[in-house]
Length: 72
Image 1 (tube, helix red, strand yellow):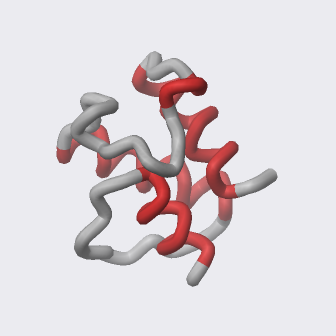
Image 2 (tube, helix red, strand yellow):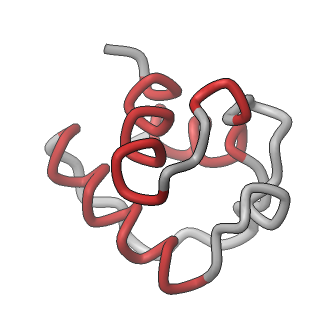
């Protein structure tokens, strides 16, 4: 499963965000993702993809997140 698809499904499951709204260009703010939601999202993604996310800086869009995860 592609990283973007994992993020889309996780946001849909946990935050009731429409998967169609989750694009590489979408900002976390535009999707209504706050810092608490981000922590939850990171934990779920780590579990689903079996990765250690770390503490990334400068992630503002879904595309930024995908690029970061794919670089791990």
